[in-house]
Length: 444
Image (cartoon, rainbow, N blue to C red; front, side):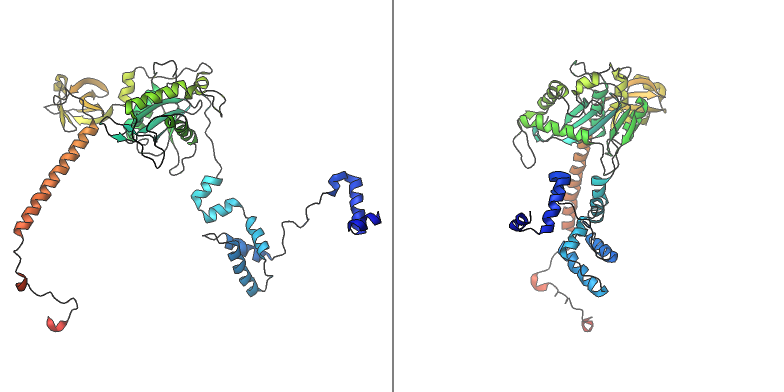
């Protein structure tokens, strides 16, 4: 064995140690073990704290910059000069959460390292989510103009089934939310889409349409608990965001007019056609597709266990709560005045001077429903709008257009008057000399 060690260029003691380790532990005994002082250094604790403090400054310095600054201070204090390798090892050992909090701020720390509490529904209709998204597709709206539509979705947390949705070109509003929730609660009359009922919890973000007084009152009447995500921190909303991604990947990308970010193709569908395609995708594809997290298709999971949803008595009752917006009005001798229109019904003759509640549909102002002390009185009709359907949005747009027209007229007339009242200008040779910009008191 001494000759074999000499031939291999190994010290005799090393060869003896290897043979002994092999006889005791086999090949595993020949594996080099970690150093006992691995991960440690001989720098003073004060110098290590200095290096850590330099590494946690904002903006994040490079390791070379930290080493130069630490070396200069160590030289002044009489400490051992740290090498680049030592400084790099100390920086790498810093807790990533500590680095994120120090250099990226509180929001980045919350997003990456905060402990999360995931809301888990234990049955259908326990938690519903709702949100809006601007769809990556261009369609032709009712006015014949190209537009990017908005999608409002109500999603059941337990089954991942869509309870209701609304597609339109108008931006998110309390009315859009109410219409989507109305569809979600009431039975659809389609055996392929059984999801319906009143949820226990309605979980949304802090959008104005979700925090409106109207939705708050409706939730109280339907015994729904409203839960909002923290402002700026929409945690727990990943499921509905994932559904929006599914819509893009499985539905929109196959339709004409699909417009991912940075593209503007010509529209290929009308808004009504897109609504039909969305409905078909839900009932024939998404609700029947195996879900990777729940292990069941959304429709099958919602129907499992013979669940009986909680429903309103009638659709008219649901409309009163969700779609018809309440507002107080006083009955005048010529009827009830609302939104610049006059509404009449013979029943109102007995309530002149009384304060009533007017419920109206923002999509159609031709008539309003009048209630007195929570008792239905009548349907008051506006004679000017009786033969047509006029939405509140159209009324507001007409008011704004009229106001702009009047302001332009006023501005044009005032300009004419200012020009005529201005003093006549003098000839160029008679114009007074301009005063010097530098003030000289001898000239004053």
